[in-house]
Image 1 (cartoon, one colour):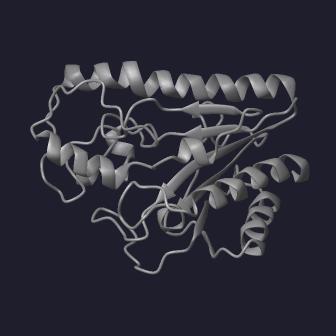
Image 2: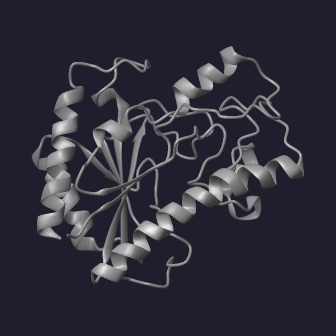
Length: 247
């Protein structure tokens, strides 16, 4: 049976080691509240698909950023794969080279190996594979966001010119618009994840990013589920099922 690969990198709040942190719990809690993709692992939960969920917080290690700071634009703000500064720009963590290498080895690369294996196994069984890069985003831009436009859509679709077919982007846009939601294309965030082994090399590996505006399912700037949570969850579940039938 063909399965989607659901990549969920930012839903965990778990910080399994505190080496290098120079701030207290209150600041870490505030950053966690701000930066976590709350409940995305629940919103995109699917028993019939492959879920690759990071079980550690992005505040420990952000698997969506390039491991090499020279390739990662957010490293300029101290928020590369290993965050050293808060969203406000304050120093949060100082890591030695040894500590950085340990975290990358034990968390970053092991996560990417899981994603690669899932994609590889699907390719062996089928003619292609579709990755859904699953996220949420704040209705208010972060301080370190590259795009600080204040008016944000309900849903954002992140694309890649090589790996995101127009047919899938168009289907996704129509689906959410038909359900009454405003849709941005690569706005406010762009791109979607593809294992580096296949990136720009294999068109059979398809990928799009789906981001849900947190105002749709959380109460204000809290992490409390709103009464609309189950509605959004049902909309996403229906989308995933229809996507497998129509693509």
